[in-house]
Image (cartoon, rainbow, N blue to C red; front, side):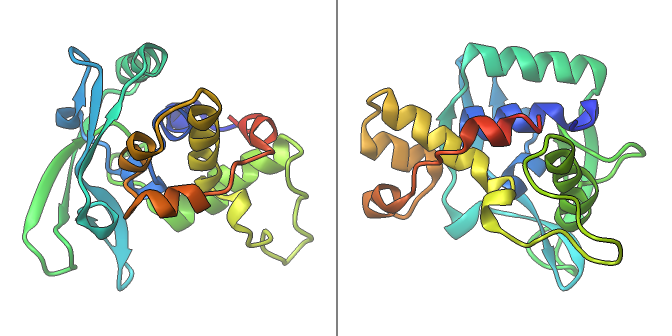
Length: 198
């Protein structure tokens, strides 16, 4: 369903709770295989039609546990698709150029753009998995938050809550502003369905 080049994104989203832009901006220097932690320090986002690097939402850098299974998937991904240096401006299109060695990139190099990925990869995989209907000719996919990669964060939160994770720790892992936001974070009931796309 999801092309092999991007399959590990599903594992990172569902197993570490990263936002889509944080997955796109996941740099080699921020994955600590030796200690079992992943440091979320930046994301790839679009500003005025241009890709830029920026800090995570609300500037909240954080550390997230890196499960052994997810670490293995990321290592295997790196063997087949070695991380590449990607240079983008910081914060705004005319910002200073920053280079990060990213785990996920386009076939010819370069950062992944959210809109292109969602339309050409993610939504297509959901259609193939039977999660969403194929749009009629000339129409676009239905815009629904639960059909985006954000559903993987709900999956992550649901699994940790079901396992009895401390709400304060989970809030920190998700990069939420506070525990109240996490308490309002709805559990994703259709998690098995969305994972079929991976």
